[in-house]
Image (cartoon, rainbow over all chains, first blue to last red; front, side, top):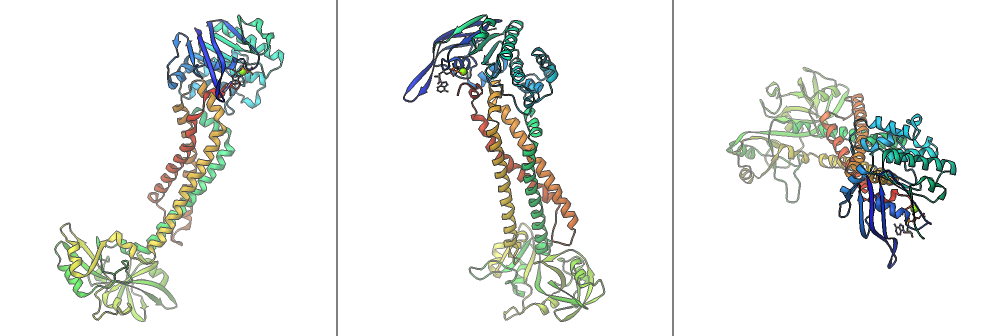
Length: 217
Length: 361
Ligand SMILES: Nc1ncnc2c1ncn2[C@@H]1O[C@H](COP(=O)(O)OP(=O)(O)OP(=O)(O)O)[C@@H](O)[C@H]1O
Ligand SMILES: [Mg+2]
């Protein structure tokens, strides 16, 4: 379980020129390690996460997820790789409005993407791990922001990912709740041995991380 | 269909609204189909039900269409067809529209005259020479039954029997002998008395239809194709089918529009699911399945309602609904609706999972 980014450069089209979001970035995250990424707005933190999540292909450099080099893989193969080895917790929880909390975690199995057997039992275990077992039957509009963020986190773990990517999970929460969510991420990283990258604005969360990567503006 | 079912239940108001539109369209399509069939039966059932595979008309004048109203065949044409090789039987059939009355009651009827002993009518030998076989509707409208007298265009006739549901040109049929038909038919304007309006032919594969047509000066078509030569049939049937076609198109457009809006609305959900590793194929299958459930549900209910209305209407109006008549249009509604939905849902393919990472836009 590990994530490796080697010499990754990512540019976006910007009028006639190109804007460099990631400039020859190297990052190595072993399993069980929580790596926090901080930096000012626009410094490329989300871009790094998007590259690591295989949602965007860098101009140069390689991304290796759990030992699999993603360079040159097709869309379908990347989607499958995400489904099996990568967990993504989005900045906005992005829960599906029609699904209950436990169904949010079953959705991939339900769509037939993964083995459906035992999906509900595993989903309940994960909800329990983020402290939401009581609210398993609630739909998102009846959950608080912090609860939604925890469902979002639990959902990222349903496929037992090797790599867990979390983008500003606390941006919509007050400080106390934000700290609780970061604590939870640190605990889950250690328990499950995931290679975790946590993007955050809030320096107060850094002590929970094993490593900190600073992005310059 | 994990997400599809839950979305159906969660957004039931919206789906119910669209489902109701589909239901109403299916109901209308069902009713129109029943009306089309009912009207068609009252127009063509006598000709369509003839035990003959071809109908020979006098060749129409240049530029004219085949028409029962304008046709009249001569004794000579009858003889040529009777003697033609491969023709098992050629029987003259006289057709005229007139009024019949019995006591106080009267009705417009179609008089179909046949030769004595003709196979064209069941119990063909039971009448002729002053007696007639009435279709059930004709007997009902005149209030007569077997043995009763009635008047046909001023001539006294007797009811030999009442049988069949034959209609022609929206009037119930009275089967008579050719002599009685000749007496009520308007003058043909020909030098010789016509043998009938058309010839009903039973042919075998060996018959040279074209050659006999040339020699006899007739135009012969299959019985099924001859129906368009009945007065209003083509126009009537055509406009009803056009209406139904419009309903098919409306339904497909409504379903397409609904799923366009719906798919745009849930693009965020789709991006998240793609980012989590759901393949486009599975997401498409889920969404198309949802459209199918909505379409099948609405169409089945609407069609069932049409069938119920048809059963209530009974025989008072020209309305005929059988499962065979209902199934086709219902299948077309579902198929076209699915096509409309699929075109809308297709945009799932273009959703970029990158948009799920809220901060990268
Ligand atoms: N899709 C895109 N097209 C063009 N430019 C982009 C795109 N996404 C990001 N950028 C640019 O790339 C740079 C890095 O953006 P990124 O979102 O990675 O920053 P960030 O560190 O996550 O910022 P924030 O803290 O505000 O979320 C920014 O200058 C941004 O304007
Ligand atoms: Mg960002």
